[in-house]
Length: 358
Image (cartoon, rainbow, N blue to C red; front, side, top):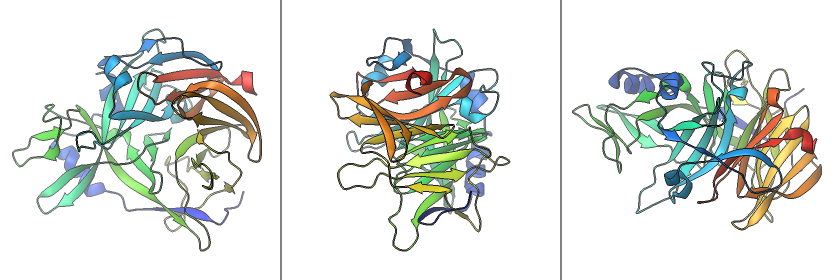
């Protein structure tokens, strides 16, 4: 399949020195296994509204009602590798973005949920941070992105950054903060202490894929991401949320199986496919053997819909999803579609039987 013109991504330089300085200051990375050994919150299995969900859970009371943090993206250990587990565990990863609350924006975070025992999911949040070089060493900034989609491939977690493009993180870089510090501050102090908005684990960005476009084309908005494991090599699928006159394009990039990064030439990743035939209100798109499964939303009070088929030839399954559906991903061995919802007091992670919509 040949590359197509129109939009592309430019991979920035890797923050090797900055990440190394942060890890060195905090005693080295603990990686994902460190987080999975220290889960501190419990989710509750519950019935999820809508005709499509067959299983799901709700976050704990604080996360379900938060007016700061809004869930957006989803991926799983089934995306990560062929074994579909990490350290023997079935894991779901979600992303959240921060609203401004009392003048403070905390950027974005990801959450790792152990669903090995579906009767008792447990989880922990990890704050995404950007290490920035300074004359004194390194400082930290929040990663202020909408984080509308996720792809977990190998040791990398790719996070949708809308107009910016894609942020890429290496999970081995997860570090443990020695003290909780000031919950209103993100800072490395001269005495060696650190404030991490109260988070125990931080994940620094390695590099970004910056959204660019060829002459005569509009840059793509990377509203959501997913992984198509039914192709060889695997492909990253991205698309745009849009209403009215906004574009609703879908795009696919090849992933290098050796590195779990996008295939590039001279620093540029060019798509294998670019389609203008998405649907309004797309929140996520998973692809299984060439068939797209697209979630769409209908505001705070309307049930979402699932579109199935090919760009330009979708069948709508109207109002089968809960209110506020977001990203979507596929679990191959279970033939399940996983998604999540965003609104306070209506926040769920849920499973659908793909065969019901094939």
